[in-house]
Length: 290
Image (spheres, rainbow, N blue to C red):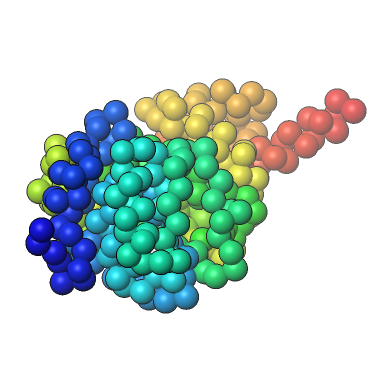
């Protein structure tokens, strides 16, 4: 059996030996280009003395690159039982540095495993849960969060939404929630041919860094405001925000936003102002009730 320079078997051999055929139901597209995997690991900056959380490790292509790049410890979260044996073989090759966890990333709490060293999330995310995972990470409490940065693979369309500016076609709820608390930028695009099976879309690697002090507002209210506003994005805010109840006109006036404006025109600071105004309005309503 041929081996790589690092002494490990080729990924295609690992996939064949363990019968790892990617499942569409799990959003799997295995990353087999080890040069690309190394480039992704480098994009995460120095991983020395750092714990890396990887989601959807699959046969371990990116996992190898993270370990080879000097990650002090990698916690690999993988839901697919078929991939566990391959990952545990990799753990034996890097004793004490790779912890394999069989879990659903949407419900798994990594905090008990993280320890005291800096934590970075680096992942070729399963595309069917990528957006939900990102929202969970940028809305986590308390803030600043348990990770210092994230380097994540998304479909190009989703990546554009994450970094979109107001008045662009891609700007939406995901843009606001991410940019409120984080700085986000697209690092580079990845051709479908880098994956097995190749997805029908181009992918993009996104770098996300938490802001130490985001504009203050109630996270739940910001989520509610953006949900109402972008849930009916073609309507003026004086109509779409009625879903929140209360005095919509007063809410917009307090936030300094014209009632004829539409959601896609409002910057992140404007949505924060709306959340702050909603908090004040509801506090007044509560006081009146009591």
